[in-house]
Amino acid sequence: MESEAQRAIRFNAALNAIGHHNCKDSFKSLIDSAPHLFRGFRFAYSTNNTKLDLGFTSLSQIEEDCPTLNKYYSGSGLLVYDDDIYETTVTKGKVEYLLLLSIYFDSNIASAFRIWENGGKVSDPRFYQLLEYVKRRNLSFDYSFFILERMTELMNTQNTHPFETIRALKQFDYATIKETDNGLLVTPSLDNGEAGRLATETMSYFARQPWVQESIVRQKSVYLIMLKAYSLYLMNKKSIDQNLCALTKFCLDKIGRFAKTELYFAWKFFKYRTKFNFFSPINSLTPKSLKALRGMCWDLFFLRHQETITSAVPTDGFSVPFMSSLDNKFVELTKACPIRCTLMDLEYDKMHTLYEDEFEFAEDLNAALSDSLKSEITNPIAAKLRAQRPLTTETTIDQEIETLSAELAC
Image 1 (cartoon, one colour):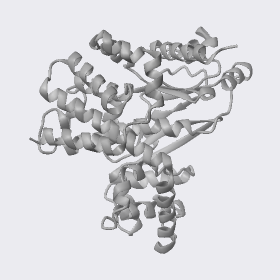
Image 2 (image 1 turned 90 degrees about the vertical axis):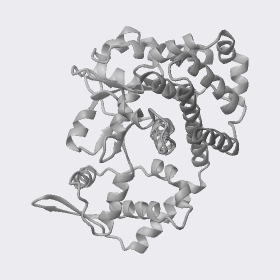
Image 3 (image 1 turned 180 degrees about the horizontal axis):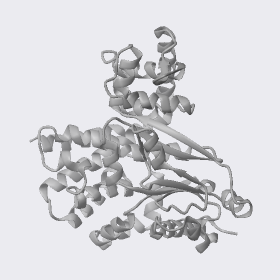
């Protein structure tokens, strides 16, 4: 009988095997190399392999079919695994499984929907390609991330754009469709009052959900950690080791957690900021830097938000996220933080998003940390106590953000 501790060790070993497997090689060879390692786990695996020997969906094909959709995973395709899928594929040669395509949208798509609802003409024809693609496949948009990002504005009656965006999306949900010589014509069909009522219901539903407030606190934690990383970088631009060590201690002291994913984001900025356009707005301190950093941290939090969504997917399905955008910002993000795999252990409610260069980050972090700090992180009793303590309150995080922002504004 496998204990919880033994299963956790096997989970980490599975992550290690996945991370070191060449994404151009056969997926089946990964599983067959140590089938016991993956038993009981589920995962979605990003691949560039063209020899498709297990359940596969082409992510690049979706991007080609609809240019406004940008994939979340780094590879050109996605392979999925659980015990049943693997065994059925081996015995029958093929298998059916549920892929849940989740489409999110950024601010420029939101603006386009408001124009569309009001009968205006969106100048970028790719928007109409998006409408047609979604309607022909009976897909829908996921409002959750947009609402999280706009929650404060939704409570502000002076700013009607977030409400109007959701109302326009409700119109799209119920829109009439008609084949024409130029493709599919998608036309709003609800009156504004009914669409507004549905939008209000959606906003009220999210406002009542405890996980929404928890997510907002988590996003603020991402911003606080990256704000501290930015401050450390400006004071000491060359010492990655010193900055990583200081930031790790800051996470333990101020957030109360070893924030590994956020430390990965900061490490990527420290080490590769000039390589990726995603970080270009904060390569130096300007009057617009903090505003740019705040927006970037919402983009980074989208990657974290997907962990919440993925953990809520039915056990017979796999989440396949796409961001709908008319610019390349999300593409630049996924280049900077490329995702290899999402590994899940549903029995113990455990999941891990594995980044392509996560092992390089782990090596650099291990080299950067002092022995005393490594001992504090790895000590099982201390780790358990940290996990049992509630996260730092939103008020405290807001105060820390205000203090750091004031220092950088000087």
